[in-house]
Image (cartoon, rainbow, N blue to C red):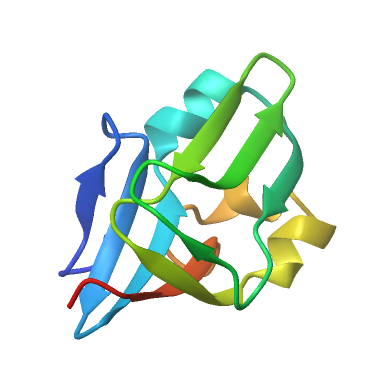
Length: 107
């Protein structure tokens, strides 16, 4: 796991804070709840959200996990690869299979 890794949203997600930016991904605990990952949906680049708003979702065979904004933010990048090939999340959830990068708007 990465040195800056911090779990949030009941341990289902992780975030790495770097200045005003955050990289957000899913933990193995979330993948265990979801089962086999079938679909990943992520908000569009440039969209802005308030704390608690939906920003992404992982749908699996058994369940789904919603990703909620941890703060006021703007989506700066989304991982297109996991949207096209959702199973990639299962291979490296705390590494290359990050979900989205955002810019914090609260300072």
